Image (cartoon, rainbow, N blue to C red; front, top):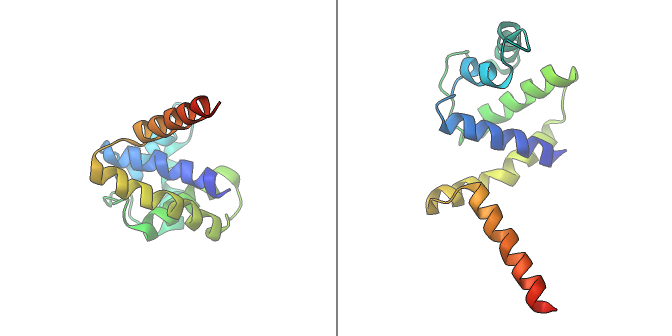
Length: 126
């Protein structure tokens, strides 16, 4: 489960980096009105997180991000999630985000380089 939550954190980090940095803008992008009752979704997330809909979010604020992911999970699944798993998902990603930002490489590029290195090692090993 923590890797599923990690995936949501990756998505939210991308949204925030592109300027979708409030509950209003994040949920409008994540759950567009063409497919959802977006205003009800936003209101539910605001209620669950205690964060105002127009508050600018910072990905490095783990408390707010974990609350946001917990709220999204609750809306999507209809049950209260395991906060331990959500926290583990954030922790899996948080170190990678800091490292990637510091060297200016995207997560996709880092993953690709890692995969190519593994393939090269495997081929050369034979």
